[in-house]
Amino acid sequence: MKRRVGILTSGGDCPGLNATIRGVAKACYERFGDGVEIIGIQDGFSGLINNQCREMARSDFSGILTTGGTIFGTKRTPFKMMKVVGEDNVDKVKAMKENYKKQRLDCLLTLGGNGTHKTANLLSEEGLNVIGLPKTIDNDIWGTSVTFGFHTAVDIATDVIDRLHTTANSHGRTLVVEIMGNKAGWLTLYSGIAGGADMIVIPEIPYNIDKLCEACERRNRSGKDFSILAVAEGAFDTDEAKLKKKERARLRAEAGITTATNRIARQIEEKTGCETRVCVPGHMLRGGSPSAYDRVLATKFGVHAAELIADGKFGYAVAMIDDVVSENPLSEVAGKTKFVPEDDQLVKTAKDIGISFGD
Image (cartoon, rainbow, N blue to C red):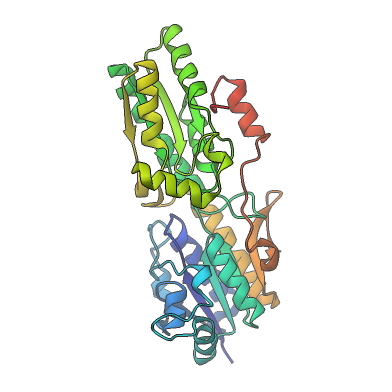
């Protein structure tokens, strides 16, 4: 009897999704030959809820290694809504379990970030055979040193900062670039160092605006009339750090802002007289073809998932642990976020070369 392997991609897209899907598929075909059928599930968990599934052919996985996005489509279905029966009167968990059985799946592979891993763990606890694969440009999934998509996003963000250097230098401006990363600052930290930013602001280290202004003025006194600030979208200042998340969001809404980026730029200009501009590359950071690094990483993760299928080892999330592809129990990964420690070696490295974090 053929093994039937379901695959879905959930949450925001990122480079490397198709490369991972391809890695899983090719490894399964190599291991099981004609004894495996791969079922593509459309638009993440929404597709499993609504039974939007189709049997894939081997040819469907050809030529997708370098392709951005996901051949299965993706959609955000928040974990907090999974157990909520809405106006459509659909019990989502019950529907997913029923469609898993209707499709005669032997296992389900979920490619996604923190929310996806929480739902994957929920389905595992409900008795389904589930394997998670770590996808996010934020690199904030607990238990793995790296996620696929992260290094491509670092490359793109670094290129943005590189290009801002020339225009900032030409006009004598302070340029503030907002980098994706709502909870964790890994992407801003890596790209900020790689791009030669003068200041890096991340959620894990609340900033003092006066310290950032001092850094700008210090550069001016040294004869450099421009500065580059890399700011994570989830950054907040030392006053906001004393507030609860909802209160912080309320005050920002009243001020007409969602992130601190524009406020930082305005305050620096007001306090120092330095002309400032803001750049928000936004979704560019998670689009396009994956880097060579991410193509290799995605392939390794996909192959390991096929190994777990062969071993009948379910309820796990694929991970990079001590430079070796391995796995962690989904129950240990779900609900946790990998933050940048304040004493992280990379933070120390940045500070040792004069980068200010505004702390």
